[in-house]
Image (tube, rainbow, N blue to C red; front, side):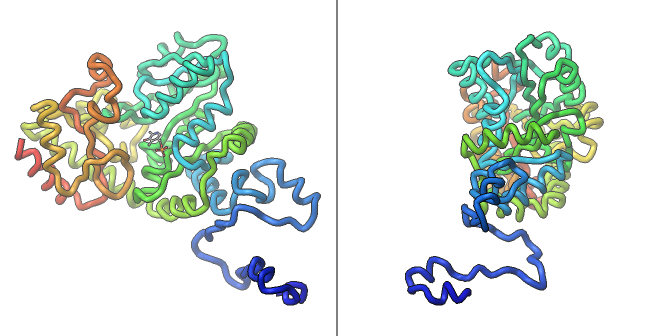
Length: 397
Ligand SMILES: *Cc1c(COP(=O)(O)O)cnc(C)c1O
């Protein structure tokens, strides 16, 4: 503490405790910089800090060292030039959409999207004059036919919920690139360990880091990764205005979880494929929607696009319809009935009555969701324990 500080009264000194610097060694883990504001030696240095996402830290809404570590980590895995973290997946998605779109623009988006994203696009259409065309997303010609002179953005998800349809990213993004249209891909279900959309031409990759990246069901976070630094800067400026900034402790939890992403993803993929195969042979199950199984409509595409694994989420159709689905999820003991996915715990849910309840019967059928469809998000428990649980629950139907 300086002589100046020593001369202060206790009330002043306690507001300015000595800040310990790490000298002579380095912290092995990423430190939590929880303070939201940074002090500068002079006015010019402070003015300079307002210039962009690559300048000195000044205020957490514009950037923070712990949050920046997460941004660099995810950008590195995705092969992007930079990233912007947000307080949730929806925070990242809305920041990207609002930064890149204006009234009069046109968006082409897949039909089967995460519910929050679907609603955000519907809101942009109803209240902000953004035209949205939904496509099935399994045919590049359908995207080409939907293009308009005002088309600004193509919005895709690598793997759909809950029937695990795989999107042909190179083909669809190729059509957008030819037309000068930006592509945004939600890569939450596959993570950069299984798929890196920027390698297939995507301009922006978004994540609900709440799911696999965080991985322990204890943090809400989102990240947008940019192929190009100018696009990053543009969206960062809007992010500062919107204020869906990530808290440093949440960034720290996400980084802590991400250290085991490699181990966890291998387990999620292996267990899900193993259980999908066993469920397909069970008499109470009429269909299993897992792209790693030969009967899935995107099996060949998955072999090409997701050779390292297809993630931990898939769906089953139960012979007994809605009643069987209710009895099944109620009889499970190890797997929990809960929304979300990507954590260490195995979760199940019934899409027709929850995540997809706003769809009509025809829309449900078009999305491949029946009354007896149950989604499984396989965790990292021992697969034999999970199978025993699924088998005992199926035995009660
Ligand atoms: C959960 C999820 C989101 C939204 O993320 P939050 O962190 O809950 O805001 C977006 N996309 C997909 C695919 C998701 O699973």
